[in-house]
Image 1 (cartoon, rainbow, N blue to C red):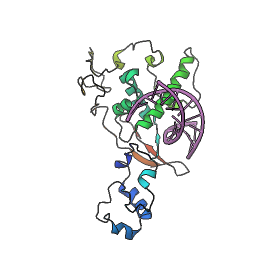
Image 2: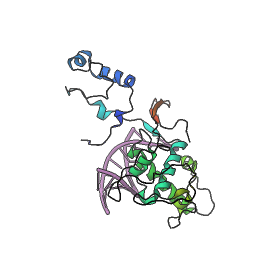
Image 3: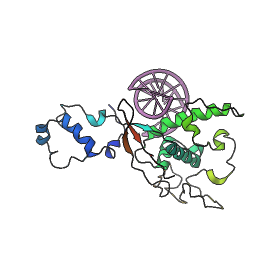
Image 4: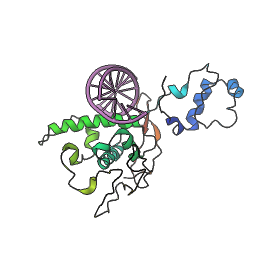
Length: 226
DNA sequence: AAACAAATAT
DNA sequence: AATATTTGTT
């Protein structure tokens, strides 16, 4: 049994998408038998109590996420600001605060990105590292200190945010992602990331029909506000 | 529970 | 090819 936290259905599917599905899966008279006739059908799919059917909510597959350059840039920014220590999928996801983006989306992307970074460390010289699959990653500049772990960021653009500590920036006119001076609870185990107002305006993803196979795809950053 | 890397699947 | 999912380990 999957006991995952896949609550994506709470936000994504529009009633128009859900309705036809429910209609094909639940026969009309069954639908009336239960209470879903009561205009409450723009709720997320409840599984039919009859259990005679399969469970669409658990079986339905979320469309693949498209990592646009804009979305990737946001990812890189988040990692840069978090610092390598704090840049784990959950916190990256929170900092990015992109509506509909899941931890697994980020984890998968992070894994690939790390491989890309390793591949580039090898070619620290000058040679192009582009294996043609790296177009996405190449679309956003890699902050220098990603490649040299021992090295501190030369500029204060990437000052790692440490939860308990207060940052002192002398010049603060880089409205990148403003990290609030005080946030969450002090040092303790987990801290809460507030919804950042500037960087964090959650973008409501939309679903696009692409590709000849009719695969549905999720594009979160169609046109950046970046 | 979450992170991680490697392998594998779609 | 790009992303997701699974697996085994910490």
